[in-house]
Length: 129
Image (cartoon, rainbow, N blue to C red; front, side, top):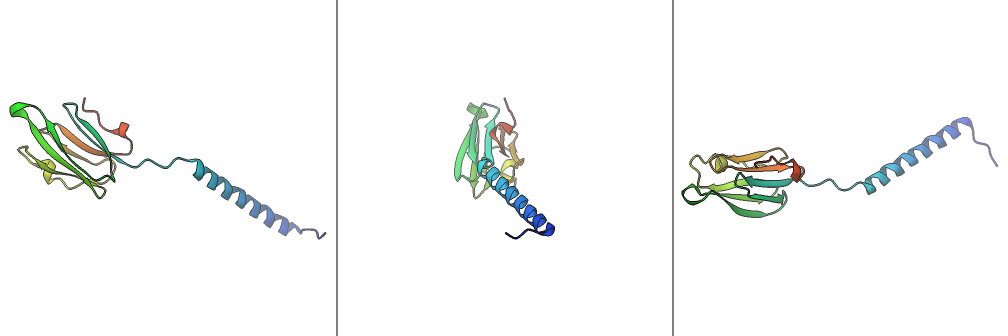
């Protein structure tokens, strides 16, 4: 049986260490849960709350207040973006706002007390209550 030279032993140790590191990395990736996808949280000061995945396709109307103080906002989630497409508030700031698509972005309708925001986890959403 041939003896390994010192340089060959060092090379084998480096290769073995690299294989152990690679196996550890693959094992850790397999055991880690997939990161959560961002969610869209829409809520009002009146207690309405809805949570959707950012990659969902959904359109819904949020009704706030009652009687003469009733307000309506239409929220659309499509193509990884969120937009307020219609509102019967006086200033239309929420409708004029560019669509949002990233964690931390919000669209707010102050007259109706509505906030639509994108968060990494539902519990990260602002509390309006």
